[in-house]
Image (cartoon, rainbow, N blue to C red; front, side):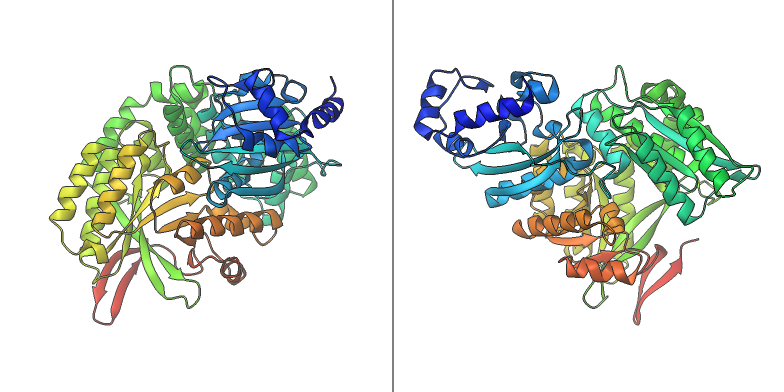
Length: 561
Protein backbone atom coordinates (compact mmCIF):
# COMPACT_ATOMS: atom_id res chain seq x y z
CA UNK A 1 0.00 0.00 0.00
CA UNK A 2 1.35 3.45 -0.87
CA UNK A 3 2.22 5.68 2.08
CA UNK A 4 -0.27 8.41 1.12
CA UNK A 5 -3.13 5.96 0.76
CA UNK A 6 -2.21 4.35 4.03
CA UNK A 7 -2.16 7.77 5.66
CA UNK A 8 -5.63 8.64 4.42
CA UNK A 9 -6.96 5.37 5.73
CA UNK A 10 -5.15 5.78 9.02
CA UNK A 11 -6.51 9.30 9.51
CA UNK A 12 -10.07 8.15 8.94
CA UNK A 13 -9.54 5.49 11.60
CA UNK A 14 -8.00 7.88 14.08
CA UNK A 15 -10.63 10.61 14.13
CA UNK A 16 -12.83 8.73 16.60
CA UNK A 17 -13.46 9.16 20.25
CA UNK A 18 -10.84 7.95 22.65
CA UNK A 19 -13.25 5.31 23.95
CA UNK A 20 -13.18 3.61 20.56
CA UNK A 21 -9.42 3.27 20.82
CA UNK A 22 -9.76 1.92 24.35
CA UNK A 23 -11.93 -0.86 23.01
CA UNK A 24 -9.45 -1.59 20.26
CA UNK A 25 -6.66 -1.65 22.82
CA UNK A 26 -8.54 -4.08 25.03
CA UNK A 27 -9.07 -6.42 22.10
CA UNK A 28 -5.28 -6.22 21.39
CA UNK A 29 -6.02 -5.86 17.66
CA UNK A 30 -4.68 -2.38 16.97
CA UNK A 31 -1.28 -2.22 18.66
CA UNK A 32 2.09 -3.86 18.55
CA UNK A 33 3.37 -3.86 22.12
CA UNK A 34 6.51 -4.77 23.99
CA UNK A 35 5.03 -6.92 26.77
CA UNK A 36 1.36 -7.36 27.60
CA UNK A 37 -1.25 -4.89 26.25
CA UNK A 38 -2.43 -2.19 28.66
CA UNK A 39 -4.96 0.63 28.54
CA UNK A 40 -3.74 4.16 27.80
CA UNK A 41 -6.61 6.53 27.15
CA UNK A 42 -4.34 9.58 27.13
CA UNK A 43 -2.16 8.11 24.42
CA UNK A 44 -5.03 7.58 22.05
CA UNK A 45 -6.52 11.00 22.76
CA UNK A 46 -3.31 12.31 21.26
CA UNK A 47 -3.39 9.85 18.38
CA UNK A 48 -7.07 10.44 17.63
CA UNK A 49 -6.48 14.00 16.41
CA UNK A 50 -3.13 13.47 14.69
CA UNK A 51 -2.94 13.24 10.91
CA UNK A 52 0.00 10.90 11.35
CA UNK A 53 1.58 8.04 9.47
CA UNK A 54 3.63 6.82 12.41
CA UNK A 55 2.50 6.56 16.03
CA UNK A 56 5.15 5.84 18.66
CA UNK A 57 5.38 5.53 22.43
CA UNK A 58 8.77 5.45 24.16
CA UNK A 59 10.09 5.37 27.70
CA UNK A 60 12.22 8.21 29.06
CA UNK A 61 15.38 6.47 27.86
CA UNK A 62 14.03 6.70 24.32
CA UNK A 63 13.23 2.99 23.82
CA UNK A 64 10.15 2.27 21.71
CA UNK A 65 7.43 0.35 23.57
CA UNK A 66 4.55 0.92 21.13
CA UNK A 67 4.54 1.42 17.36
CA UNK A 68 1.78 1.56 14.75
CA UNK A 69 1.40 2.98 11.26
CA UNK A 70 3.12 2.98 7.88
CA UNK A 71 6.40 1.49 9.09
CA UNK A 72 6.68 -1.06 6.31
CA UNK A 73 5.84 1.53 3.65
CA UNK A 74 8.46 3.92 5.02
CA UNK A 75 11.22 1.64 6.29
CA UNK A 76 10.55 -1.74 4.73
CA UNK A 77 10.07 -3.27 8.20
CA UNK A 78 7.02 -3.96 10.34
CA UNK A 79 6.20 -1.81 13.35
CA UNK A 80 6.94 -4.67 15.75
CA UNK A 81 10.52 -4.79 14.48
CA UNK A 82 11.16 -1.38 16.06
CA UNK A 83 10.04 -2.35 19.57
CA UNK A 84 12.87 -1.99 22.05
CA UNK A 85 14.95 0.13 19.65
CA UNK A 86 15.87 3.77 20.17
CA UNK A 87 13.28 6.20 18.82
CA UNK A 88 16.17 8.16 17.26
CA UNK A 89 16.64 5.27 14.81
CA UNK A 90 13.54 6.56 12.98
CA UNK A 91 15.29 9.84 12.21
CA UNK A 92 17.96 10.58 9.58
CA UNK A 93 21.45 10.77 11.18
CA UNK A 94 22.03 14.52 10.60
CA UNK A 95 18.79 15.30 12.47
CA UNK A 96 19.33 12.94 15.42
CA UNK A 97 21.06 15.46 17.70
CA UNK A 98 18.28 18.00 17.09
CA UNK A 99 15.70 15.29 17.75
CA UNK A 100 17.48 14.36 20.98
CA UNK A 101 17.29 17.93 22.28
CA UNK A 102 13.59 17.96 21.31
CA UNK A 103 13.04 14.81 23.39
CA UNK A 104 14.90 16.44 26.27
CA UNK A 105 12.61 19.45 26.11
CA UNK A 106 9.61 17.14 25.85
CA UNK A 107 10.72 15.29 28.97
CA UNK A 108 11.09 18.52 30.94
CA UNK A 109 8.21 20.62 29.56
CA UNK A 110 5.70 17.88 28.81
CA UNK A 111 5.01 18.93 25.24
CA UNK A 112 6.77 19.01 21.89
CA UNK A 113 5.21 21.42 19.43
CA UNK A 114 5.26 20.32 15.77
CA UNK A 115 8.81 20.43 14.42
CA UNK A 116 10.34 19.45 11.09
CA UNK A 117 12.90 16.65 10.71
CA UNK A 118 13.86 13.98 8.18
CA UNK A 119 13.13 10.30 8.54
CA UNK A 120 15.72 7.55 8.17
CA UNK A 121 13.77 6.14 5.22
CA UNK A 122 15.17 5.66 1.73
CA UNK A 123 14.27 9.18 0.67
CA UNK A 124 15.12 10.90 3.99
CA UNK A 125 11.61 12.32 3.80
CA UNK A 126 10.78 15.54 5.62
CA UNK A 127 8.19 14.90 8.36
CA UNK A 128 6.54 16.82 11.18
CA UNK A 129 6.91 15.37 14.67
CA UNK A 130 4.90 16.33 17.77
CA UNK A 131 4.43 14.78 21.17
CA UNK A 132 3.25 14.81 24.77
CA UNK A 133 4.63 13.32 27.95
CA UNK A 134 2.37 11.03 29.94
CA UNK A 135 3.09 11.28 33.67
CA UNK A 136 2.72 8.82 36.47
CA UNK A 137 5.08 6.25 37.93
CA UNK A 138 5.70 4.70 34.52
CA UNK A 139 6.26 7.94 32.61
CA UNK A 140 6.27 7.75 28.81
CA UNK A 141 6.14 10.09 25.90
CA UNK A 142 4.02 9.67 22.80
CA UNK A 143 5.03 10.94 19.38
CA UNK A 144 3.25 11.42 16.09
CA UNK A 145 5.08 11.60 12.76
CA UNK A 146 3.21 13.22 9.88
CA UNK A 147 4.31 14.07 6.32
CA UNK A 148 4.60 17.70 5.30
CA UNK A 149 2.38 19.10 2.54
CA UNK A 150 5.52 19.26 0.41
CA UNK A 151 9.08 18.10 0.73
CA UNK A 152 11.87 20.35 1.89
CA UNK A 153 14.71 21.09 -0.55
CA UNK A 154 17.29 18.34 -0.89
CA UNK A 155 20.97 18.71 -0.14
CA UNK A 156 23.19 18.47 2.92
CA UNK A 157 21.99 20.34 5.96
CA UNK A 158 24.33 22.95 7.46
CA UNK A 159 25.94 22.40 10.81
CA UNK A 160 25.19 19.22 12.69
CA UNK A 161 27.08 17.08 15.14
CA UNK A 162 30.01 16.17 12.92
CA UNK A 163 31.36 12.93 11.55
CA UNK A 164 32.61 11.51 14.83
CA UNK A 165 29.29 11.84 16.66
CA UNK A 166 27.29 10.31 13.79
CA UNK A 167 29.69 7.39 13.35
CA UNK A 168 29.55 6.73 17.09
CA UNK A 169 25.74 6.75 17.01
CA UNK A 170 25.92 4.05 14.31
CA UNK A 171 28.34 1.95 16.36
CA UNK A 172 26.25 2.25 19.53
CA UNK A 173 23.01 1.41 17.73
CA UNK A 174 24.47 -1.79 16.30
CA UNK A 175 22.99 -0.91 12.90
CA UNK A 176 25.08 -1.39 9.73
CA UNK A 177 26.87 1.70 8.49
CA UNK A 178 30.04 3.07 7.01
CA UNK A 179 32.76 2.62 6.08
CA UNK A 180 34.38 5.94 6.91
CA UNK A 181 36.42 7.39 4.05
CA UNK A 182 39.63 9.35 4.58
CA UNK A 183 41.10 11.71 1.95
CA UNK A 184 44.49 13.38 2.30
CA UNK A 185 46.07 16.09 0.12
CA UNK A 186 49.85 15.86 -0.20
CA UNK A 187 52.53 17.67 -2.17
CA UNK A 188 56.21 16.92 -2.73
CA UNK A 189 57.00 18.60 0.60
CA UNK A 190 54.38 16.77 2.67
CA UNK A 191 50.79 17.52 3.63
CA UNK A 192 49.06 20.28 1.65
CA UNK A 193 46.63 22.78 3.18
CA UNK A 194 44.31 24.44 0.63
CA UNK A 195 43.01 27.96 1.16
CA UNK A 196 39.80 28.58 3.06
CA UNK A 197 37.63 28.91 -0.06
CA UNK A 198 39.00 25.74 -1.68
CA UNK A 199 38.71 23.89 1.61
CA UNK A 200 35.04 24.81 1.92
CA UNK A 201 34.33 23.80 -1.68
CA UNK A 202 36.02 20.41 -1.17
CA UNK A 203 33.77 19.65 1.81
CA UNK A 204 30.68 20.78 -0.08
CA UNK A 205 31.52 18.60 -3.07
CA UNK A 206 32.24 15.56 -0.89
CA UNK A 207 28.91 16.02 0.92
CA UNK A 208 27.01 16.37 -2.34
CA UNK A 209 28.62 13.42 -4.11
CA UNK A 210 28.23 11.05 -1.15
CA UNK A 211 24.46 11.51 -1.15
CA UNK A 212 21.73 12.76 1.15
CA UNK A 213 22.72 12.42 4.81
CA UNK A 214 26.48 12.37 4.13
CA UNK A 215 28.84 14.16 6.49
CA UNK A 216 32.23 15.35 5.25
CA UNK A 217 34.47 17.36 7.52
CA UNK A 218 38.05 18.59 7.75
CA UNK A 219 39.90 16.60 10.43
CA UNK A 220 43.27 18.29 9.89
CA UNK A 221 44.85 20.61 7.35
CA UNK A 222 44.25 18.99 3.96
CA UNK A 223 42.78 15.90 5.63
CA UNK A 224 39.08 15.04 5.33
CA UNK A 225 36.81 12.41 6.79
CA UNK A 226 33.62 11.30 5.08
CA UNK A 227 30.68 9.27 6.36
CA UNK A 228 28.60 8.48 3.25
CA UNK A 229 24.88 8.96 3.04
CA UNK A 230 22.49 7.38 0.53
CA UNK A 231 25.30 6.81 -2.00
CA UNK A 232 27.84 4.03 -1.20
CA UNK A 233 31.40 5.16 -0.58
CA UNK A 234 33.29 5.39 -3.91
CA UNK A 235 36.82 6.57 -3.15
CA UNK A 236 38.08 6.56 -6.78
CA UNK A 237 35.18 8.78 -7.83
CA UNK A 238 35.72 11.11 -4.88
CA UNK A 239 39.44 11.27 -5.67
CA UNK A 240 38.66 12.27 -9.25
CA UNK A 241 36.23 14.94 -8.05
CA UNK A 242 38.71 16.53 -5.65
CA UNK A 243 41.57 16.31 -8.19
CA UNK A 244 39.44 18.02 -10.84
CA UNK A 245 38.45 20.73 -8.38
CA UNK A 246 42.08 21.42 -7.44
CA UNK A 247 43.15 21.53 -11.09
CA UNK A 248 40.35 23.94 -11.94
CA UNK A 249 41.48 26.14 -9.05
CA UNK A 250 45.04 26.16 -10.37
CA UNK A 251 46.42 23.89 -7.64
CA UNK A 252 49.04 21.63 -9.26
CA UNK A 253 51.41 18.90 -8.09
CA UNK A 254 49.04 17.86 -5.29
CA UNK A 255 47.89 14.26 -5.02
CA UNK A 256 44.82 12.86 -3.27
CA UNK A 257 45.39 9.77 -1.13
CA UNK A 258 42.49 7.76 0.23
CA UNK A 259 41.74 5.04 2.73
CA UNK A 260 38.55 3.39 3.99
CA UNK A 261 38.05 2.12 7.53
CA UNK A 262 35.11 -0.22 7.95
CA UNK A 263 32.86 0.19 10.96
CA UNK A 264 32.29 -3.55 11.19
CA UNK A 265 34.05 -4.62 14.37
CA UNK A 266 33.59 -8.34 14.90
CA UNK A 267 34.49 -9.31 18.44
CA UNK A 268 34.24 -5.74 19.76
CA UNK A 269 31.36 -4.37 21.79
CA UNK A 270 30.03 -0.90 20.85
CA UNK A 271 32.11 0.86 23.52
CA UNK A 272 35.34 -0.79 22.33
CA UNK A 273 34.51 0.00 18.70
CA UNK A 274 33.79 3.61 19.61
CA UNK A 275 37.16 3.92 21.35
CA UNK A 276 38.96 2.52 18.32
CA UNK A 277 37.12 4.93 16.01
CA UNK A 278 38.11 7.93 18.12
CA UNK A 279 41.74 6.89 17.97
CA UNK A 280 41.49 6.49 14.17
CA UNK A 281 40.15 10.03 13.77
CA UNK A 282 42.81 11.48 16.07
CA UNK A 283 45.62 9.54 14.34
CA UNK A 284 44.50 10.63 10.87
CA UNK A 285 44.21 14.27 11.94
CA UNK A 286 47.83 14.14 13.12
CA UNK A 287 49.53 11.90 10.58
CA UNK A 288 47.17 11.19 7.70
CA UNK A 289 46.77 7.84 5.98
CA UNK A 290 50.26 6.68 7.00
CA UNK A 291 49.30 7.03 10.67
CA UNK A 292 46.11 5.06 10.06
CA UNK A 293 48.01 2.24 8.37
CA UNK A 294 50.72 2.10 11.07
CA UNK A 295 48.02 1.86 13.73
CA UNK A 296 46.51 -1.18 12.01
CA UNK A 297 43.35 0.43 10.64
CA UNK A 298 43.86 -1.11 7.22
CA UNK A 299 42.14 -4.06 8.88
CA UNK A 300 39.25 -1.93 10.12
CA UNK A 301 38.49 -1.05 13.75
CA UNK A 302 39.26 -4.56 15.00
CA UNK A 303 42.61 -4.48 13.22
CA UNK A 304 43.78 -1.63 15.42
CA UNK A 305 43.18 -3.48 18.67
CA UNK A 306 45.06 -6.50 17.33
CA UNK A 307 48.23 -4.36 17.15
CA UNK A 308 47.70 -2.23 20.24
CA UNK A 309 49.70 -4.10 22.90
CA UNK A 310 53.00 -2.31 22.20
CA UNK A 311 51.27 1.07 22.35
CA UNK A 312 49.62 0.10 25.63
CA UNK A 313 53.01 -0.58 27.25
CA UNK A 314 54.39 2.74 26.03
CA UNK A 315 51.36 4.62 27.27
CA UNK A 316 51.38 2.88 30.65
CA UNK A 317 54.97 4.06 31.19
CA UNK A 318 54.08 7.59 30.08
CA UNK A 319 51.24 7.78 32.58
CA UNK A 320 53.23 6.28 35.46
CA UNK A 321 56.16 8.64 34.84
CA UNK A 322 53.93 11.70 34.34
CA UNK A 323 55.19 12.37 30.82
CA UNK A 324 52.67 15.15 30.34
CA UNK A 325 52.00 18.69 31.43
CA UNK A 326 48.79 20.59 31.96
CA UNK A 327 47.87 23.73 30.01
CA UNK A 328 45.14 26.08 31.24
CA UNK A 329 42.57 27.93 29.13
CA UNK A 330 40.28 30.61 30.57
CA UNK A 331 36.49 30.37 30.62
CA UNK A 332 35.03 33.86 30.94
CA UNK A 333 31.75 35.59 31.62
CA UNK A 334 30.49 36.77 28.22
CA UNK A 335 28.89 39.83 29.80
CA UNK A 336 32.11 41.42 31.12
CA UNK A 337 34.89 39.02 29.95
CA UNK A 338 36.06 38.39 33.53
CA UNK A 339 37.66 34.94 34.05
CA UNK A 340 35.33 32.49 35.79
CA UNK A 341 37.58 29.43 35.86
CA UNK A 342 40.24 27.68 33.78
CA UNK A 343 40.11 24.31 32.05
CA UNK A 344 43.13 22.05 32.49
CA UNK A 345 44.14 20.43 29.19
CA UNK A 346 46.63 17.59 28.91
CA UNK A 347 49.82 18.04 26.87
CA UNK A 348 51.71 14.74 26.46
CA UNK A 349 55.54 14.80 26.52
CA UNK A 350 58.46 12.51 25.91
CA UNK A 351 61.34 12.22 28.34
CA UNK A 352 63.10 15.13 26.64
CA UNK A 353 59.93 17.28 26.84
CA UNK A 354 59.26 17.02 23.11
CA UNK A 355 55.60 16.60 22.24
CA UNK A 356 54.77 12.90 21.92
CA UNK A 357 51.47 13.15 20.03
CA UNK A 358 48.34 15.20 19.66
CA UNK A 359 46.46 15.39 23.00
CA UNK A 360 43.33 13.92 21.46
CA UNK A 361 45.30 10.97 20.12
CA UNK A 362 46.97 10.44 23.49
CA UNK A 363 43.63 10.34 25.30
CA UNK A 364 41.97 8.22 22.60
CA UNK A 365 44.80 5.70 22.82
CA UNK A 366 44.39 5.42 26.59
CA UNK A 367 40.68 4.85 26.08
CA UNK A 368 41.20 2.26 23.34
CA UNK A 369 43.70 0.14 25.28
CA UNK A 370 41.88 0.27 28.62
CA UNK A 371 44.04 2.81 30.50
CA UNK A 372 41.48 5.59 30.87
CA UNK A 373 41.18 5.33 34.65
CA UNK A 374 44.96 5.40 35.11
CA UNK A 375 45.26 8.48 32.90
CA UNK A 376 42.33 10.21 34.59
CA UNK A 377 43.84 9.64 38.02
CA UNK A 378 47.22 11.03 36.93
CA UNK A 379 45.46 14.11 35.52
CA UNK A 380 43.33 14.55 38.67
CA UNK A 381 46.48 14.49 40.80
CA UNK A 382 48.20 17.05 38.56
CA UNK A 383 45.17 19.36 38.61
CA UNK A 384 44.91 19.13 42.41
CA UNK A 385 48.53 20.25 42.61
CA UNK A 386 47.94 23.15 40.19
CA UNK A 387 44.71 24.24 41.88
CA UNK A 388 46.34 24.10 45.28
CA UNK A 389 48.87 26.72 44.24
CA UNK A 390 46.57 28.95 42.25
CA UNK A 391 45.38 31.23 45.04
CA UNK A 392 41.71 30.23 44.98
CA UNK A 393 41.38 30.22 41.19
CA UNK A 394 39.02 27.48 40.03
CA UNK A 395 40.49 24.85 37.71
CA UNK A 396 38.34 22.41 35.72
CA UNK A 397 39.50 18.80 35.57
CA UNK A 398 38.19 16.46 32.85
CA UNK A 399 36.86 13.11 34.05
CA UNK A 400 35.80 10.44 31.58
CA UNK A 401 32.56 8.53 31.73
CA UNK A 402 34.52 5.34 32.37
CA UNK A 403 36.11 6.74 35.54
CA UNK A 404 32.88 8.37 36.62
CA UNK A 405 31.20 4.97 36.97
CA UNK A 406 34.16 3.19 38.62
CA UNK A 407 33.63 2.36 42.35
CA UNK A 408 37.41 2.20 42.94
CA UNK A 409 37.95 5.58 41.29
CA UNK A 410 35.18 7.03 43.47
CA UNK A 411 36.77 5.70 46.65
CA UNK A 412 40.16 7.09 45.64
CA UNK A 413 38.57 10.45 44.87
CA UNK A 414 36.79 10.46 48.22
CA UNK A 415 40.07 9.87 50.05
CA UNK A 416 41.82 12.59 48.04
CA UNK A 417 39.06 15.12 48.73
CA UNK A 418 38.99 14.33 52.44
CA UNK A 419 42.78 14.75 52.65
CA UNK A 420 42.83 17.95 50.57
CA UNK A 421 40.67 20.56 52.31
CA UNK A 422 39.51 23.69 50.51
CA UNK A 423 38.96 22.12 47.07
CA UNK A 424 35.38 23.40 46.92
CA UNK A 425 36.74 26.85 46.02
CA UNK A 426 39.39 25.52 43.64
CA UNK A 427 37.96 22.68 41.54
CA UNK A 428 35.36 22.08 38.82
CA UNK A 429 34.84 18.59 37.36
CA UNK A 430 33.97 18.27 33.66
CA UNK A 431 32.33 15.01 32.62
CA UNK A 432 33.55 14.16 29.14
CA UNK A 433 31.42 11.90 26.99
CA UNK A 434 34.39 9.75 26.06
CA UNK A 435 32.43 6.55 26.51
CA UNK A 436 28.86 5.48 27.06
CA UNK A 437 28.07 5.47 30.77
CA UNK A 438 26.54 2.04 31.28
CA UNK A 439 26.36 2.07 35.10
CA UNK A 440 24.39 5.25 35.72
CA UNK A 441 23.77 4.40 39.39
CA UNK A 442 27.53 4.32 40.01
CA UNK A 443 27.98 7.58 38.11
CA UNK A 444 25.26 9.21 40.21
CA UNK A 445 27.15 8.18 43.35
CA UNK A 446 30.27 9.95 42.05
CA UNK A 447 28.26 13.09 41.29
CA UNK A 448 26.78 12.98 44.79
CA UNK A 449 30.28 12.66 46.28
CA UNK A 450 31.44 15.74 44.39
CA UNK A 451 28.36 17.71 45.42
CA UNK A 452 28.84 16.70 49.06
CA UNK A 453 32.22 18.44 48.82
CA UNK A 454 30.53 21.42 47.06
CA UNK A 455 32.50 20.89 43.85
CA UNK A 456 30.65 22.15 40.73
CA UNK A 457 30.07 19.68 37.91
CA UNK A 458 30.01 20.43 34.17
CA UNK A 459 28.69 18.18 31.38
CA UNK A 460 31.10 18.50 28.44
CA UNK A 461 30.35 18.27 24.69
CA UNK A 462 26.64 18.83 25.25
CA UNK A 463 24.74 18.20 22.03
CA UNK A 464 27.40 16.00 20.43
CA UNK A 465 25.43 12.81 21.06
CA UNK A 466 22.06 11.66 22.24
CA UNK A 467 23.47 10.25 25.49
CA UNK A 468 24.26 13.74 26.81
CA UNK A 469 20.56 14.53 27.14
CA UNK A 470 20.01 11.41 29.22
CA UNK A 471 22.93 12.40 31.44
CA UNK A 472 21.47 15.86 31.94
CA UNK A 473 18.32 14.25 33.28
CA UNK A 474 20.16 11.64 35.37
CA UNK A 475 22.88 13.84 36.89
CA UNK A 476 22.64 17.06 38.84
CA UNK A 477 25.10 19.38 37.09
CA UNK A 478 25.91 23.07 37.43
CA UNK A 479 27.14 23.74 33.88
CA UNK A 480 26.82 22.29 30.39
CA UNK A 481 29.35 23.00 27.67
CA UNK A 482 28.03 23.22 24.13
CA UNK A 483 29.84 21.20 21.51
CA UNK A 484 31.97 23.66 19.54
CA UNK A 485 30.71 22.63 16.11
CA UNK A 486 27.40 24.39 16.77
CA UNK A 487 29.21 27.57 17.82
CA UNK A 488 31.37 27.45 14.68
CA UNK A 489 28.31 27.19 12.41
CA UNK A 490 25.89 29.45 14.27
CA UNK A 491 26.62 32.67 12.38
CA UNK A 492 25.76 31.05 9.03
CA UNK A 493 23.14 28.52 10.11
CA UNK A 494 19.73 29.44 11.45
CA UNK A 495 19.28 25.75 12.25
CA UNK A 496 22.29 25.73 14.56
CA UNK A 497 21.20 28.99 16.23
CA UNK A 498 17.84 27.40 16.99
CA UNK A 499 19.58 24.31 18.29
CA UNK A 500 21.73 26.39 20.67
CA UNK A 501 18.72 28.36 21.91
CA UNK A 502 16.87 25.10 22.61
CA UNK A 503 19.84 23.64 24.49
CA UNK A 504 20.12 26.83 26.57
CA UNK A 505 16.42 26.52 27.40
CA UNK A 506 16.81 22.89 28.40
CA UNK A 507 19.88 23.59 30.56
CA UNK A 508 18.09 26.41 32.38
CA UNK A 509 15.14 24.11 33.03
CA UNK A 510 17.37 21.84 35.12
CA UNK A 511 19.20 24.74 36.78
CA UNK A 512 22.45 24.63 34.80
CA UNK A 513 24.40 27.47 33.18
CA UNK A 514 25.79 27.16 29.65
CA UNK A 515 29.37 27.45 28.41
CA UNK A 516 30.08 27.81 24.68
CA UNK A 517 33.47 26.56 23.49
CA UNK A 518 35.54 27.40 20.38
CA UNK A 519 34.61 31.09 20.33
CA UNK A 520 37.14 32.79 18.08
CA UNK A 521 35.51 36.08 16.97
CA UNK A 522 33.64 38.97 18.54
CA UNK A 523 30.67 38.15 16.32
CA UNK A 524 30.47 34.63 17.74
CA UNK A 525 30.77 35.94 21.31
CA UNK A 526 27.96 38.48 20.75
CA UNK A 527 25.71 35.84 19.20
CA UNK A 528 26.24 33.38 22.05
CA UNK A 529 25.37 36.11 24.58
CA UNK A 530 22.26 36.96 22.56
CA UNK A 531 21.19 33.30 22.56
CA UNK A 532 21.37 33.13 26.36
CA UNK A 533 24.81 31.55 26.80
CA UNK A 534 26.47 32.89 29.96
CA UNK A 535 30.10 31.75 29.64
CA UNK A 536 32.56 31.41 26.77
CA UNK A 537 35.81 29.64 25.99
CA UNK A 538 38.04 29.94 22.95
CA UNK A 539 41.02 31.67 21.37
CA UNK A 540 39.19 35.01 21.51
CA UNK A 541 39.62 34.98 25.29
CA UNK A 542 42.98 33.24 25.45
CA UNK A 543 44.92 30.23 24.21
CA UNK A 544 45.97 27.47 26.63
CA UNK A 545 48.87 28.57 28.86
CA UNK A 546 51.38 26.62 30.87
CA UNK A 547 52.25 26.81 34.57
CA UNK A 548 49.21 28.33 36.23
CA UNK A 549 50.45 30.13 39.37
CA UNK A 550 49.25 32.82 41.74
CA UNK A 551 50.90 36.14 42.57
CA UNK A 552 49.74 39.07 44.64
CA UNK A 553 48.97 41.03 41.50
CA UNK A 554 47.07 38.13 39.98
CA UNK A 555 47.82 35.08 37.90
CA UNK A 556 51.10 34.71 36.08
CA UNK A 557 51.10 32.79 32.81
CA UNK A 558 53.77 31.19 30.70
CA UNK A 559 52.75 30.68 27.11
CA UNK A 560 52.28 27.14 25.87
CA UNK A 561 55.28 26.19 23.74
